[in-house]
Length: 152
Image (cartoon, rainbow, N blue to C red; front, side, top):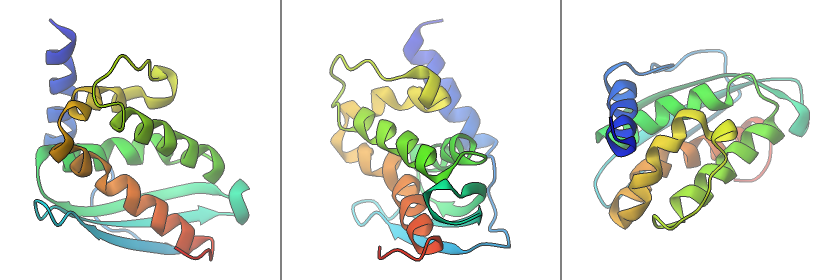
């Protein structure tokens, strides 16, 4: 199986079998983002254990509607950030953002950091789809800032 086909399967699997979908309590921060280009929406809730950047991302839940890319990306994002300190989770988000901004160039993303999110490498070639892939990640970032009491 070619790499691109394998990546498509990862995305479709997360779309068909989403992880952590459904808004849960308790939570300290929530953010709702909309992609005005296509109408995709995501609401993300973040529950932290502790305070500041050393706080642990204890739970992330979401409710979203939209294309398979935005839905699958939300599922992958929750898998990657739950259980990590906020500082590390934000680093994963930064790595994903760099992948999306690569525009399909020969960027060597860190597979150990991105895990299943590496499957979105092909999405970076399509500017209209990048916002879909980033929707839940940006909502997570804002919800986390709210949970920490930071301006967002």
